[in-house]
Amino acid sequence: MSALRTTLFAAGFMALGALAATTTSALARPGGDHGGPPVLKFGQLLASLDLDETQEAALLDLREDLHDEMKASHTDRRDELKTLAEGIKSGNVGRAAIHSVIDAESAARTELAHRVTDQVLDVYDTLTPEQHAALVSRLETIEARHDEMRERKQGEDGDSSRRHRGH
Image (cartoon, rainbow, N blue to C red; front, top):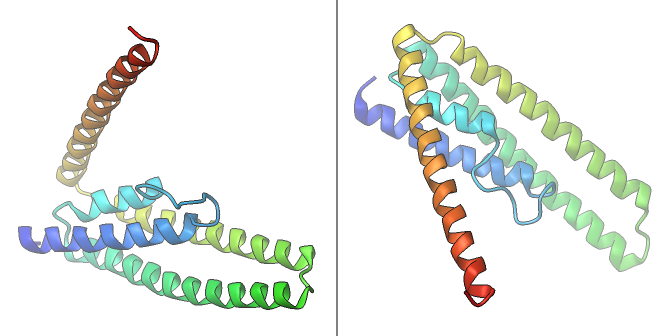
């Protein structure tokens, strides 16, 4: 795959991952999630590798599946919100009905997470030794950046706590 095509492919996967992360975590965490579930981040890393056509097709299929799932989920949520609003207006909102909606959404998110995980790991299983080495290198770079940011944040937190104590 060409470098430009690899970049565009990875960018598209990241955008879809951000959409999926926001959609699937909106109910679980008010304000959504920052960065997305780890398996989607892993899928983004895979998409950034120099993949062969079969590997690329598998990730494209996953992207399309997620896109379709997110569109359907958005429509379902809009319908559920409308139903809930109508129940509130009429004064006839039952806890059992709300609980069953929550349970159904949780089950759907879990099923989707399992399916996405399996598809991403199916692609991982096909990596060549060179692709695996490139993936390990990228993971080490990411870990180093996270460590640097964590250390910098801890330093800033220490500075701000001293300022607050009058030191």
